[in-house]
Image 1 (cartoon, one colour):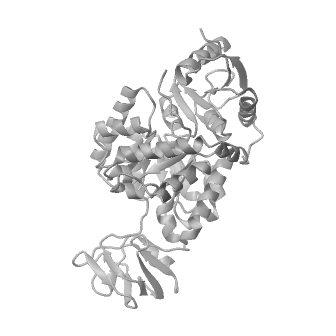
Image 2 (spheres, one colour):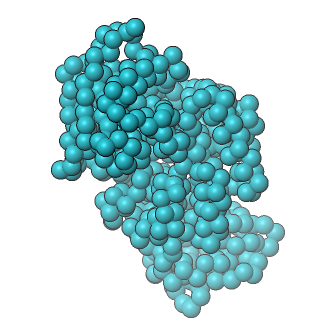
Image 3 (tube, rainbow, N blue to C red):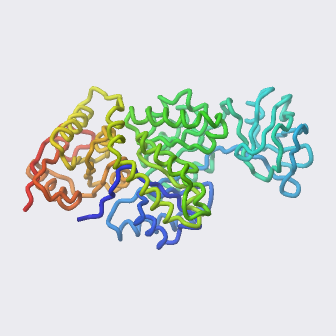
Length: 475
């Protein structure tokens, strides 16, 4: 039997200096990582090219499709450089934020982003360095703004700036992002993660450029995106709850509430949803997480997330494989809780009056009634398997496809075990292949029914109009 994960929620691990060696990547995969994230905010393109090559080599050796996510940096607003590398901000001091490439000095903070000064208004709050420092705007002029320090500390070169409550006049794609996007697609990336999405137009711009060559993950990390969340979800292929900047720009107590709402809306529309940032943060140094961190991972799983993500824990942490293994254990513990399944069953999905949604709903109901052990979905685009996953059946969904990229993309979707197989051309071939794959890929050894879905005519993308119940007979 082919190795199949003993869980449904997937694990994304970020590659970095601590985990980029091929043996490490393979260890992470074997520990439970289903997907690898390449963070284009760090490293150069030569490093990323090597990582692409290494992941695909391990994929071939392991015989399992592996998802690669290219995460673009986006228009991160940062301060410029300071004389000496930093400056002290003391509570009550007045400082000037100036559109300038000059070195910052006592009382002057260089901001090489005129868009920020255009958007800021009197009494606005600016948060610096992930919220560690804070300024209150007292006056705005041409190319500069005066502010009072309300939370002091040391401000270093290139630290981030957040302007809560304001929508900045910026595209989610910088010129550098567009270069990285084309590079990632040339390498064969499966998903592009779009940072700092603020409006539906940001997603549409990326879709126009990508033109179907990869799928889009919209990262929700700006409160402005919440105003158009429904439209953003529907335009995207997947959603990420990116709690880093979101936690800086929102009141901390609102982040769990917003996380739950983003997951709910994503699930309702059948979009895979990822929960990310600081999930096992202490494991950057420690060999074990805190109890609060394991509860955080468990909460995301209980809420129905398709995937949970490790960032610095696997990229620069001291125990990457241990972090993945612990996340794997937490997910399995939650999924073995009967209450977890009863809560998933209560979720209300927004179904469309289409044949595909009707078949997905019917497959779920038949699975529950007949206690099926697997749903086998023959698919070209992967859409059928994603719709099956949205129903959260209490059995594995085998996504069967002749398209390698589709198989890789499905490896990030809840409950889907993706398999690369040749196209089918007849009912007889469909039944024969389904029986074989049920045994080889799902390990079925009893006379239990399985469900098979496909499109007639065979091999035509975008058509799922057939459901068949097969009795699996062991040879």
